[in-house]
Length: 192
DNA sequence: ATCGTCATATGAA
DNA sequence: TTCATATGACGAT
Figure 1 (cartoon, rainbow, N blue to C red):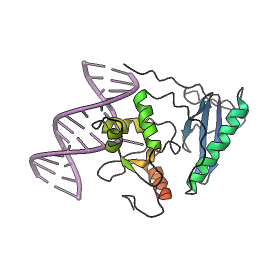
Figure 2 (figure 1 turned 90 degrees about the horizontal axis):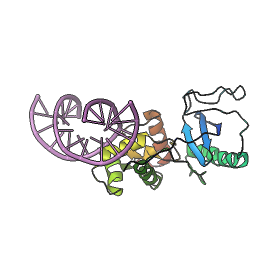
Figure 3 (figure 1 turned 60 degrees about the vertical axis):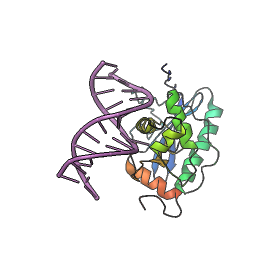
């Protein structure tokens, strides 16, 4: 039985400014649907002319959001605060609802598992697989991590490889290292 | 220590 | 079905 992921309809894209650059947050009617790292070219740097992403996944609808505006603005406040807190090495606090409809059932289970890893700790892809009841699906877990549309808030950076290696990271390994270092006050990550 | 190879789960084309 | 993965285990250098 194949699950049926639905591409979320993006109703608003807002930027989140951080010390590490400007992130792009994409919202659907159900919450935060995607978070892009700086420099992914989907960033709404041109706030007003509202050039569309036109790649289907990132339609930029301009600074004033259509219906649902109050909710989106509330979510965006939470998201922006969470992201900036993370970069200060603090707990993200309250999160906006995450629209995770793009994922298959398996991917959503993986993402839920990631969110259960406490800050400052890591789990191997194999351990995550085992926690899902599929001890041999390590590789599939890695694949699901790579499909994570909302890095940082869904802490895919806390998944590392079993041998102590970092594994991979969509936005670039540098981000993964930075995030892990921020969460670990004592350097107990394999890389430190 | 490093490299190649195989087994395995999942999803996309 | 075939191909690609952000894996993991094993054996041969």
